[in-house]
Image 1 (cartoon, helix red, strand yellow):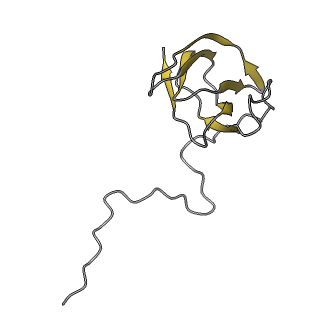
Image 2: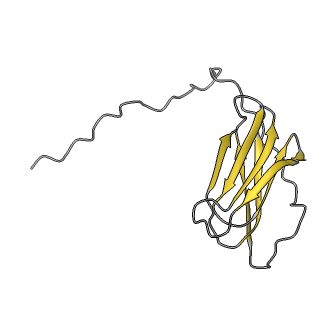
Length: 126
């Protein structure tokens, strides 16, 4: 019996040889972390963050959460004030939507006061 041969990789991962200059522009450093402005509702609540690359264009972006929790955005080492928000109880898909006006630079989403160890997040342009 002949052992199976691995199938060829259709698109090998790009590499940059040592001593050469990468062809892509350097990435911006991620925004720094700032403690949430409010404590969690419960000592057993969860918190976390996600660093997000710069949006292609500046504009209003909606951050949707699948469960109850606080969402903050940090950009340029400052909290971005929410421009609007909405929430729904009894919805299994989207519990909260918060709108932020963002510039075309990386940002961090910080979550706090989340009841479970996991949550789904969606970012959409308005």
